[in-house]
Image (cartoon, rainbow, N blue to C red; front, top):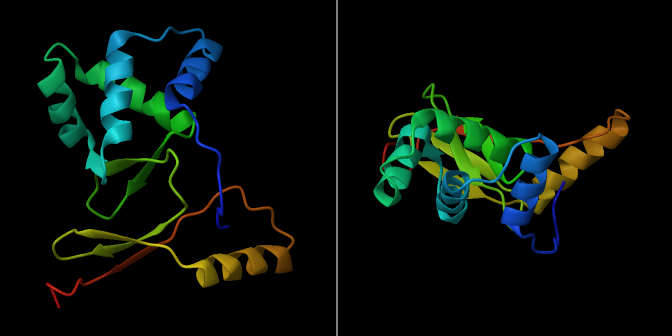
Length: 148
């Protein structure tokens, strides 16, 4: 399911609306966590994210971090994946096209790729089986060029 064009979203408006719907309020710490994660390129585990956030505010705790990341995933601003190392990794989904991942089982590097032919085949398979796709992800595990 390729995404040719999406209008830019204001992630803080999306997050704030989600938080309000849940009966919570947008705090300074939640805003900071969201800004750090949404502006980071790559796939961060919770400890890496915690380190980046604590550099900006040493008073942010793990509980606040976990709850905020959960809110970001719930409202679709962040995606979560486990790439075989037992650790959840998070990446911004804001204004980014759909992409898939190649994961090296030796060094754990993650290579992102986009392929419209693969996307089209997935849509065809869903149609063939009268299946309504909501979302999907593709992860291919193997050895990167440096580990072969």
